[in-house]
Length: 399
Figure 1 (cartoon, rainbow, N blue to C red):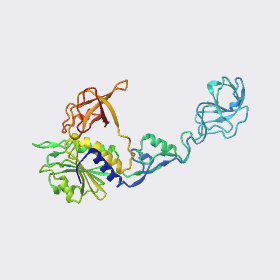
Figure 2 (figure 1 turned 45 degrees about the vertical axis):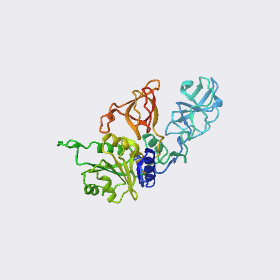
Figure 3 (figure 1 turned 180 degrees about the vertical axis):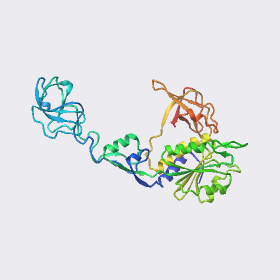
Figure 4 (figure 1 turned 135 degrees about the vertical axis):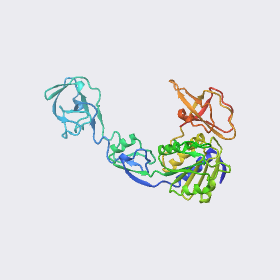
């Protein structure tokens, strides 16, 4: 077991164990697939559009007939859902509407603004420079094309694309069950009448919200007292991942890691060289994983972003986008760092000219929750980084 992992080491180990224990696959109807992660690529069953269609209202014609003043006989009409199936010959036209199939023989749409109609005859009223206004068959995609790759998280846009490909259901990864266990004799539920020494359990509800956003199913295991037996009893709930909050430091009342060890979980790393979040730990028992977060709210929220999100993505084989990093100009000086990576809660603002500024919260104490109300990013500081002056470029990670 690694006693003190770097952020990079911790993330690598989390991804390795997550990817080695992929979630199962299930088939769901498309209307229930939003937010799920594809376990297999989606392949189009049809082409889109399924035939050449008109992009404008007008007349389907042969471009060779497009001489100003030339008159064409109108043979029929083609509208969306009601195609004109016969071919058109030279000197003929078919009235057509946007989205309608283009009849055989036509290679151009004479838009109605460029036409003059008299009864069943249409005259070319304006010069036509090149064949146009026809959307070819398969312009968007062809039957057999891969529409959405495996690992893609399904959005409304993906649903529209899959539906257009005439695919009614998709194979997705089963959402992992993540048991969330808070620890501490002092914790009480929101709305409680606080007694001396008690505090509200604010972190667990926030983390469960993040778990839902990131594609997993949170399971509330409640609040365990500072007793190993209570912790061991609560983690008997069948879950793919166990997430603990608090109880992971070295005090006399920090019993969580010891309780997991007695249940057969083997340590992978014990701490992480990160600020806030040093007490973060990681263990496994077969395919079941446990990620321990610090009890301080800021530390728990930051380490959730750094480690829990990638762990969920690894378990469901979600495509991992490149790190959401950018450079921004610090709006205040930043002190030199110690031996740990630091992540400062901050607000990034973009000027109209694209200039990015970032202002760290005035108070970065790990017990504070209020900075997360406005924070949209974390300032990333490497270990032993020198002081950064106001105006210097610093690296930020979008929340």
